[in-house]
Length: 291
Image (cartoon, rainbow, N blue to C red; front, side):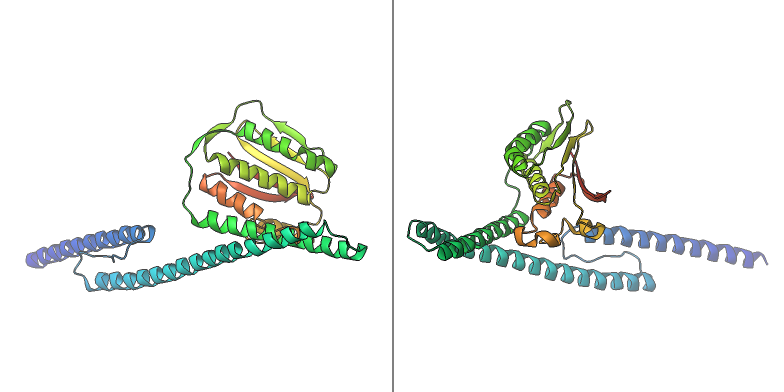
């Protein structure tokens, strides 16, 4: 009986040691797997355990890891090819469009019938829109693939916002829009890319100019939250959720917009670690960025 008890204790100790070793091996696998998914590397998981099931688990995880890397590489290659194609196409279109607009300008100096003037005016309007579209396509594809070219610096959000609003005032006045401003006197500053902040605010003001039903609210709180709101009766919650998607435009404005303005806003905001969100509240489109 004594020997059986000793044997039982020994077996239990050995089992406990094995369980502890297996738990440690599983923990090592988990940590190693998480690390491999975060970094771009071709190395596989290694396991110190001699247990057959642990080795089998490591093998299965390695197979999954290889498939994940292959899928990511195919996605990255395809995404880069699409961006390169867009850049090249946009670049190639700019030259003939510029030439067309040049000839249209020259045609203004010639004697023309009323019908010809009307036709050429329509052609010029469409050509200018195509040029704007190709410019934005080119800019977006370049911005989304290239490294950031500038250094972060101390940016005064109040000053940038006020300058942008002043630049848009003539356009707002032409549409009969009188912005309601609520900008804190507290100086809101932070380390940002100066050109990004200006482009974000400019794009949001431009978006409001296109889609506002006649009103506009602009505010900057003491906590650094920039908010812009305008009535948009033709908008829905579904469309609001898609506003930051590339090439998405509201139905009634598809002929006048490229659908890239808010995509660039989100891209630039994320590059500066600024939260951006949109909502549809009481018939108003509300966009907020936390500086």
